[in-house]
Image (cartoon, rainbow, N blue to C red; front, side, top):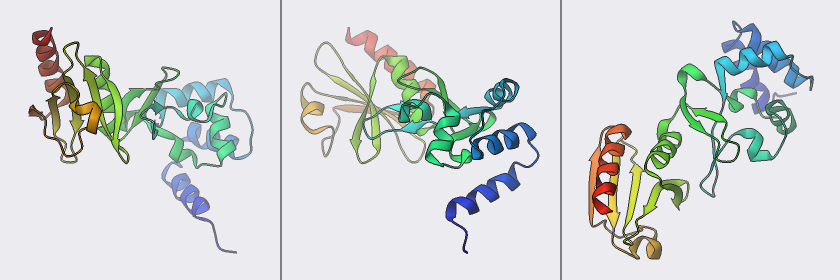
Length: 200
């Protein structure tokens, strides 16, 4: 009988991680629906993070909160999702936080968790802007809206929309009154905080 795509992915993942006994034992426990002992769970948490899940309603979630289950092991075994899809190596991850429980999450791609970090730094909120595209949005007391996006080329953009414009069209087909681009999120946050101070 032919192997399923999941079986093929699991076998590939097992080969790639054969040198990590803690992780291998964790996977075996999940596949057999057994509990993971405390020592292995602690070791796992030091090396890995739950993978960030970006929802269609503009939240960053951990797997547990995404499914409303009590633990990450339950998440992996209940859904029969390869563990490689549930965890990300801390060394390779950009750090973010679950919007529901506040726990750490990570992703190799900085796009969403990076945007989440920028949003938190400037007091903005994440919004969907079409499909799975997103922006960090902050409406000022004077009605103007600051919008932050990170482009496919790795460029960060900070723009401003006149009162009512962003709410009417969510930015589709409307140019910002002004916008600046930055190479790093840190530079954008610094500029955004300065502009926010001037807008008060």
